[in-house]
Amino acid sequence: MRESFSANTSWRELLCAPPAAAHVLQLYDNEDFLVGAVAHFAAEGLKNGEAVLLSSTPEHGARIRNAIESAGVDAAAAARNGQLSLGDVQEQLSLVMAGHSLDARRFRTLCTGPLERLRAEERFAGVRWWSEITTTLAGRDERGAGLAAERLADAAAKTHGATVFCSYPCDRYDARGYGEGLKELCCVHSHVIPAEDYVRHRLAVNRAVAEVVGELKGSVLQSLASWHGLTCSLPSSQALLFWLREAMPERFEAVLERARRYHSPDDGLS
Image (cartoon, rainbow, N blue to C red; front, top):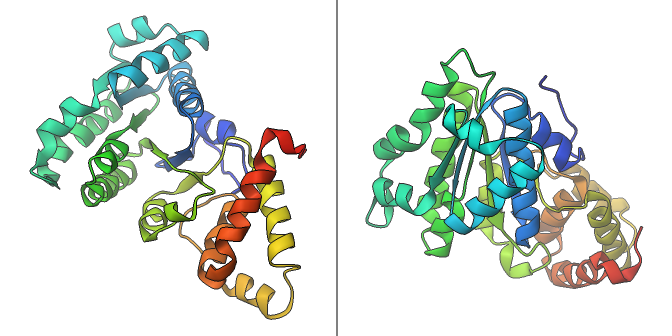
């Protein structure tokens, strides 16, 4: 059953039963979070009778498959009956890239085409797709091609009612990662997962802002209230950081530095 979610819904709830045609972005800073989130997304889809497509590096693919099995799902049986498909992201990219540019026609045929075919099969309750295409292209310094892939995937999700999930490596407390590229990437998605522990993230950010900026009131509060924000749904603490980068760039790095320290398990936040 599909549900509606608030921006602060936990990522586990969101990935368990995402809204129809959702396009979710996970920002991760460790591979255990990556593997755990993807396996949860895939396992819940398989349990719900949905078809699941995964496109990864061989290393991540092996770990994700093991994690799916650990969640009580027979991945081998799902693969045999066509419910689960495991693809190699490098092989897929070799077929859809034209030099340093993405060939939209090839991408639609080879990557989003299967979403349409599986969505039409009555034996499946829906279709889920997770891919490392954008991450792989970013690692090759081909971010423009990665954004093009995200836009095509977003269109496919809306057209075919599929759920698309993406993961992107990001140090959420490094100011260098907050270029226009990250904001643009987030805005291509419907939902953003910025951290594994939303509560710890909120406490760390709020504490850092209070100490560096002070109480948000008067003109500062008006600036935040009138900020148009991002077009995606994301936890309020991450939205606050995006606003701060635009409204008070001179204080942004100091807030991130303190938030990183307060987010650490050794800090005692609870």
